Amino acid sequence: MTKPEIHRQATVAASAKLGEGVRVGAYAVVGEDVELGEGCVLHAHAVVQGPSRFGKNNVFHAFCVIGGDPQDYTFRGERVELVAGDGNNFREYVTVSRGTQKGG
Image (cartoon, rainbow, N blue to C red; front, side, top):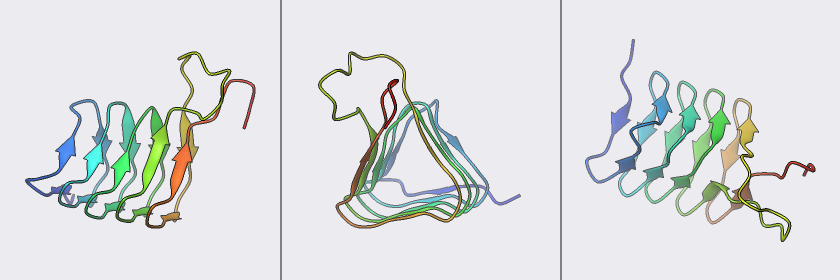
C-alpha cells in the first residue's frame, strides 16, 4: 500500500479521502467531502472542492478549480456533487463546477 504524498504546504481537509499513491503538490487544496481515487495527482496550486468524487489516475494541473458551486442562478445551496471517472486531465486554469439537481 502506497501512502498519499502531501506537500507540507498543501491543505487537505480532514474529511477528504485519498486513495493509494495520491500526490498533492505545494499550495494545492483538497476541500471537504472530496474523494480522490488511487494515483491522482494535484500539481501545485490546484483546487478541488466537494462534494466531489474522482476515479483513478486523474491529473489536476496548476490553478484549476474543480468541484465548486454550480454557476446557475437557481442554485440555493442544496447538496449536489461532481462525479468524474478515471484518467481525466484537468488542465491549467480550467473550471469545472458541480451540476444542479435539475441536471447539467
